[in-house]
Amino acid sequence: MIELRAIDRVFRVGDQPVHALRGVDLAIARGEYLSLMGPSGSGKSTLLNVLGLLDRPTAGSYHFAGEDTGRLDDAAQARMRRQHIGFVFQSFHLVPRLSTAQNVALPLVLAEVPRAERAERVRAQLAAFGLTDRAHHRPDELSGGQRQRAAIARATITRPQLLLADEPTGNLDRHTGEEVVRVLERLHDDGLTLIVVTHDPALGARAHRRLRMDDGRLVGDVRGAEAHDAAR
Amino acid sequence: MRLAEQLVFAVQSLAALRARTALIVLAMAIGTAGVVLLTWLGEAGRRYVTDQFAQLGTNLVIVLPGRSETTGGAPPMFGETARDLTLDDALALRRSEHVARLAPIVAGSVAVAFGNREREATVLGSTAELLPVRHLSLAAGQFLPAGDPRRGGAECVLGGTLVRELFGAASPLGAWVRLGDRRFRVTGTLASAGRSLGNDLDEMVVIPVASAMALFDSEGLFRLLVEARDRDAVARTVADCERILRTRHDGELDVTVITQASVLSTFDGILRALTWAIAGIAAISLVVAGILIMNVMVIAVSQRRAEVGLLKALGAAAPVVRTLFLWEALLLAVAGAGCGLALASAVRAAAAAFVPELRTGLPGAAVAAAALVALGIGVAFGTAPAARAARLDPVLALARR
Picture 1 (cartoon, helix red, strand yellow):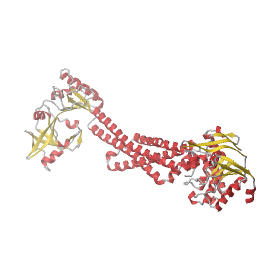
Picture 2 (cartoon, rainbow over the protein chains, first blue to last red):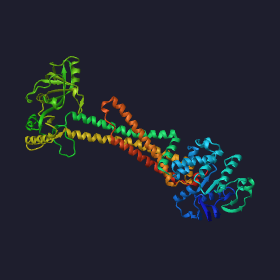
Picture 3 (cartoon, rainbow over the protein chains, first blue to last red):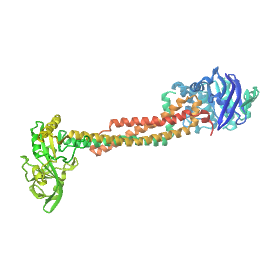
């Protein structure tokens, strides 16, 4: 589903070019569960942003679902994000003035899903994520775990093919973090392609395929389901 | 994103910051109300002044001695020619079939005395027809007698203020007053007519025109008021006046004939321009309100960077983000204009209840213009912040600060 070839991403900081990604080659099949680990500044987040079409590579090609994303203009990339890609952030990024239900509905609003259908899908999604009784609460009235569940509910309400999670448990305590990870893994079990960026070795080890980055390069790509299955 | 959803989204974000939204709406409302109310006041003033003129009769023609040949200049107030406009000139105008009435006027200033009280007053020398021509009315007694204007009688008619100051509460009728070195008998008093054309009629004495000419030792008239038979006859009256006077003045047209209507339209034009100038000045406050809107929107965009980043991550393209922020600016402007118009009508209704001259409605053009300017300001001052939001890089916007 995903094919990266010789991806470079160079930022300019002052006069200095900073190579965030150097010659990254990566193929990801539909339904995979990957973790992406590495030290700070190794390029994990940049790679995630490139995969999520939030950032364009300086060089190289990126095919998503058979489409050469480099050829798409901004509007087409936005449409692709809207239809096929979900994001989960460390700091949740819920809109503070909107209720849980309104936050979860946001992607459907952007996708112009009719109001009645939207309400039905939001109701079902909130139920699936155990947030029904929190539907009309604002984010500051939710616990950390509830906020991240709401964020995941929002990221997946359009039934995307790819879910990108950047440190999804980074702002949560251990117990709540595990609860969120179980939510993500359940989505993966239903066929979602899941990529998790994390600093947490325990979380990273649960993925079926573990990528390791250092200084903008992919330096490790280990497959194996033992850790994930062992945790069950 | 559908239009209705965009509006809901914009309203929600404005509602989230109620105090800030209310203050901006207030600023916009004051600006809008200012434009509308000042225009309305100017308009009411213009109507008041033109009504005052109209009361004097729109079929009035005024003949002034002298003629300024420089085009564009004001008509001469005092004679600039060797030849006077004489009483015989005035009487000759009766030959025109279009002239209904005419009142020659000699004006001057003289001391009026009764007993040991003395006061400086303006003396108008005229004829019995001055009363209807100037739409004056009497408080008591009789006006100047009709008869040959060349014969100067010793009758005089006093304005209200003079009566009070010279006679106190006593009736002046029949009393003899001294004007300069001559004596006149008071036959009537003028009803208070207030100010008209800058002359306070309450402080005037009216005496027969020939007596005034003798008093001031003058052969020339100050001016000549001619009333046309009706409004349609005004132009022909002017032509007749010019033709007759030219003939009498050896073929030279050395008088200026103006119509009340032309004076009226001149004042009308001046006051109209003044009204728009005032409205223009008030519009500056609208621009200031617009800058406030821009200020608020710039702050909103920088405070909501993460939200903009999120919207983009969720698949909102740049134009959608831009539209969302533009709606917010536009809604602020529209709400402000709406409140301003409501405020203006409330003020107008309250004022009209106390001051009858202010009964005129809010000028529709000003209301429409204020509303349009408000919309324009919303768009003009909302565009830059909205474009800024649309340009935000989602990666940077989402990055934790």
